[in-house]
Image (tube, rainbow, N blue to C red; front, side):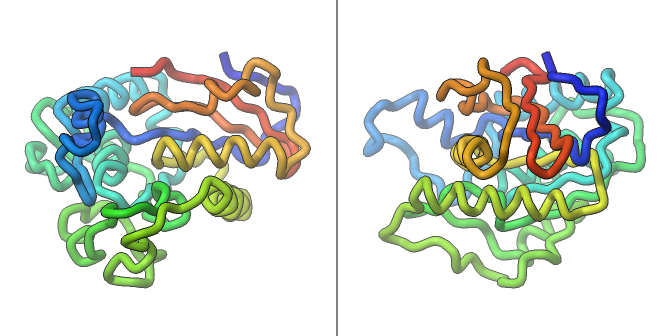
Length: 248
């Protein structure tokens, strides 16, 4: 259950890990990494599309879908598809995978919240993983604003280096502070497991946090695919974490 407080919150963020991806499917099929198909920028798996449909339906029923003022997403394909699939307005061609839709997503059209892409909330930088060009992303995901990303091609990743947990955590804290400076209060963040994990761990040290004891164990920092958690800031230095929605 989500922790509540009498005081109005400064910011209410919904942290969402992307839905199940083809790389997740490969990890489940093969324990040996050498036997897995390697994806530079994997898309959602059939299970992932099912998770997106179910999450959109649940959020619509709860009213949260219309309360979100802003969606911020990582610029990798699996997060872009998750973002548009859950929060975007249906297009005429709902079977267009590139626009975040696949068979079965049919909901009433509403004014979807703005969706913007940010490099600050992307996955840990590692060998063989990179995003597509911004031109390609704009073509495939016209509902998403990519104006915050200055470089056309992905220049952040290093072919032979794996980003450290410390670097991911520092990026996460910078991202959270950027969110807190925005005017929107109800913000959904669609990102990745390692980024969300390291950001929550860093928050415990960066802020004078009031995260409840049951959320201080390492397991709580692990997000299931398409899982949503609420992160409320009642002041800039006070954080409340709640698990709003079950894991898929």
